[in-house]
Length: 393
Image (cartoon, one colour):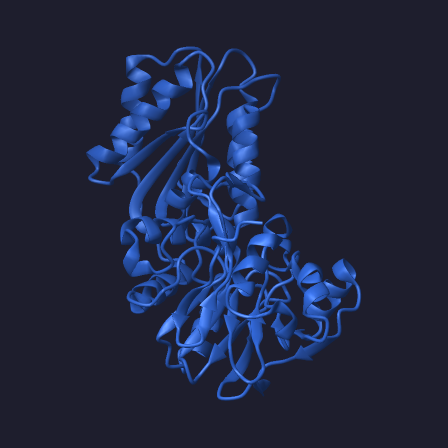
């Protein structure tokens, strides 16, 4: 094992003991171009407490960081905030060392989920309003169900004013420095938005509820489950979450397409330019060259969406079908959309795209644009005119 792996003290007696995954590039469906971290925290008090573990392949890294501060066998309490394996799958391994540690998790879903995965590890269920004393510190437990699993909860330490937030406020971002003010803020905020858009978007109501609940706490540090720890820009990320959870969108268009022989691409370019002529910024995405997760991050706060596909075997392109399936699962709010595409003879793809946009909860703002073969100059002018005349409010 690597003896150079050390804990990082983030507050007096509180240590980051997690793992950095520099190489991770996909997280259950979305591309993570900057890797991630699996954050765990060790609190030295009368009862030595570990908050969360890490993804199992990184269990030795967790153990080494803990051992750099204290003998792992001395851990008295383990708080498991979330059953998902990136936070919990090293739990049985750590329990082999901390044999007498009590595992605190949410009631009933945390207990149920951990038991199914790992068997009986001596769980202590907690519910809203429960707290424990670990000596000089108190740990208060706040359930945050469906943010983003039914078992999810956060932990607040009033003495240190630290919120151990698990998936909330996190980012998939590998970094050598642990805090927000030690890294580029624009990068962190982009990755936080990307994380919210691709994981938490369907749970806006739950996020708003959690923000209301946490609003009564004096928070000086947010110790996240992924990415960097917030200590300097807490108000900024809280404001971002309030905005994102509200479903507010901006006067901005996103155009997504695939093309076989260039005709649908010409339509995409025309639609992009037509929005720009109206003074509405527009982003142009060839789905072959941009990851779905990056496109969704842009769609998340953009009011207008245009999706294009040619027809192949009476269907839309598989790339567009996958994109729409992914988007539908995220249930974006307050968007207006249109479908477009070229075809050789059947032309079924555009209607299929439009139906999927409706199924994703989007309002159709313009009847489908279907162009046979190569679009003419007159047809492109008509598209520009139709978008110029759209009632967009």
